[in-house]
Amino acid sequence: MAACPTDFTRDSACRDGRAAAHLKLISIFLIFITSVIGVSSPVLLTRFFHGKPLYDKAILIIKCFAAGVILSTSLVHVLPDAFDALSDCRIASHHPWRDFPFSGLVTMIGALVALFVDVTATSHVEHGHYNPVEMKAGEDSGGEIGLLVGANSKSEVFASDGGGREEELVKMKQKLVSKVLEIGIIFHSVIIGVTMGMSQNQCTIKPLVAALAFHQIFEGMGLGGCIAQAGFSLATTSYMCFMFSVTTPMGIVLGMILFSLTGYDDNNPKALIMEGLLGSFSSGILIYMALVDLIAVDFFHNKMMSSNQWLKRTCFIALLLGSASMSILALWA
Image (cartoon, rainbow, N blue to C red; front, side, top):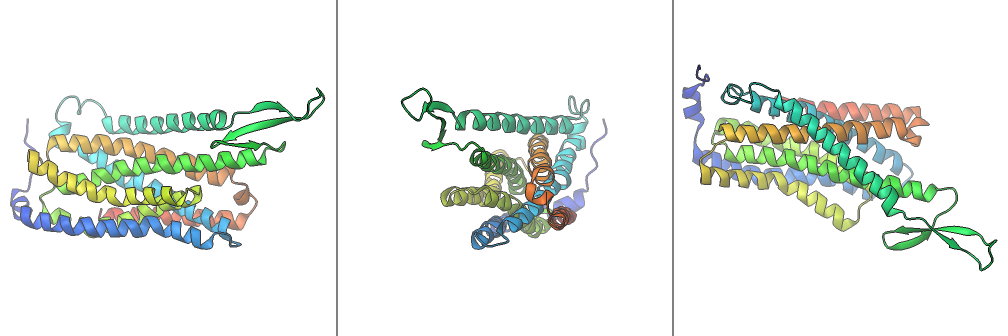
């Protein structure tokens, strides 16, 4: 079996553990700050414009931009990296990796898992969150019958038109989408952080620091737009924004610890397999969430957009801008 081609001269010149560690420490603080800026910007803008005449339209446009960012993240960043990791000759030349396209399989599994969680949670919300119980309004048998609806430990009388119930279900769906979306992004962020943390190649890390800073801004805007529309409480919103902001820096620290304990760098076959499988899985989640729960919901099932052609065109332009901005970053990261 032929050995994998390697540029040993360039590799030895770039491998400097001390310089790499210095760059990683800088990247931890820089990526944290840019992550905070990215994820909090849509949330702060939403709170500022809340109650204003254009609030609903603005939040819809932000969400469409976010959907473009998430779709591009999954298809242009995460999935190609996962394929590259499992296509490395140190992996692809061995059984079973050379016999089956595991990246595509695990991506499909990620999308199906996201679908299962989506369907199960939505069904639970529809049948568990609302529990209709018949009750008599008067003592006589001809009295009116009301519906006692249990919601968040509070009893509400459900109106005959069903408008309140439908609005509450939409809100619960938006919260579910935001939570599942953050899980997929966290998988991706951990992989990025661990890969950088394990790397000892300063030539690789230098361009990644700046590129990942912009990457986190746009990805944060994507997640922040969904969080803002979901209408979480201040505590939950702060927690979700904080978790996104610290995940990549924590991944870098974890990667540095793994290297110090095992000696594995980012080119170790075991590290490449982990990166490929986790990347494929998170890509499947993000593809499903972007296409099904973000783009399809807004462009095909949003009454406000369907009745306003100007808004529909604006949202489509926002979707293209989000996709393009994140895709351009693939030139560097």
